[in-house]
Image (cartoon, rainbow, N blue to C red; front, side):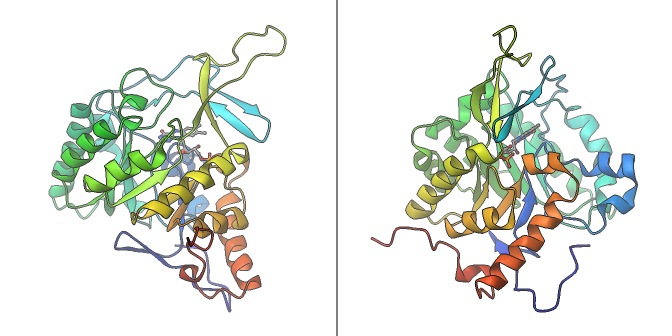
Amino acid sequence: MTPPLETGRPDLAVTLAGVPLEHPVLNASGTFDALETARRFGAGALEPFPFAAYVPKTVTLEARAGNPPPRVTETASGMINAVGLQNPGIAAWLDELPLLAGVPVPVVVNIGGSRRADYLEVLRRVEARLEVHDTDLPRVIGYELNVSCPNVGGGGLAIGTQPAETARLTAAARALTRRLIIVKLTPNVTDIVAVARAAADAGADAVSLVNTLRALVLDPQSLTPCLGNRTGGLCGPAIKPVALRMVWEIASALDVPIIGMGGIVSGRDALEFVACGATAVAIGAANFTGPEAPLRIVAELAAEMRRRGLTDLAAVRGRALSRT
Ligand SMILES: Cc1cc2nc3c(=O)[nH]c(=O)nc-3n(C[C@H](O)[C@H](O)[C@H](O)COP(=O)(O)O)c2cc1C
């Protein structure tokens, strides 16, 4: 169930790399857990389901315990986290996959890893599971390759900061599936267009950005790092201008569909990402402010469009791009 249509609501429908979505708002991986929400608050808590597609937290080949605590702390206009991709590993993750069948929207599987081979093995295992035409499985429309986690040693940023490595992984993943390949980019680079181009040229259907910015917060008393991992990733409103600039740069240079994220807390924020060229957007830190945030943002987006006389998002997509 998606949010109820109000009378006269502008058309929020978008097509992301060929996949129709009822509206453009997804969740950012690692910031909203549908299964945990249902476990804690009952299935009713997911009705209406606030997102047009669901992206679970990153899954890796082996289980990961994550980083030592503290893992999250607030910052001015944002938050910093170093969860470290805690997850049960792909085998246990696949055991739970049927539980996601209750999610009434398409699912995008977010994959992480330390090495290219690990990403590919996770993707292969998901594909193999989906091959078994099990009616009790969710509708998996694609994969988001998280080559941009700043909080894990090895893999994380090693791939996403290098266009050639990003291209190699993308091409190899492309060869393994007919589902969407979305490459999640890191803002921790000087030339985001080079990495996006590498992904697009290697066969990515879309890019998503931004993941978090490497950052450091000190404990005011001890003047030592707050987080157990010392550094972490900054997100929330503080990073929105950086994220917008990067989406804008990619949309100005390339024709690849973009899922924009970074500091979206309102419908107007979402509309700004669309004006910078994004086809869809994702909500991250705002999910931690309250369970009503995503539905509110979708409603605000509709209200913002109505106020501006926009009947659909195509009318505003790319408006901010340079026309030179
Ligand atoms: C607590 C936390 C956990 C996250 N975990 C993941 C993750 O597992 N995989 C991933 O691709 N991104 C992860 N992210 C990054 C978000 O998906 C998103 O890219 C980032 O937070 C920027 O969006 P925002 O400013 O709206 O939060 C995480 C972010 C936070 C705050």
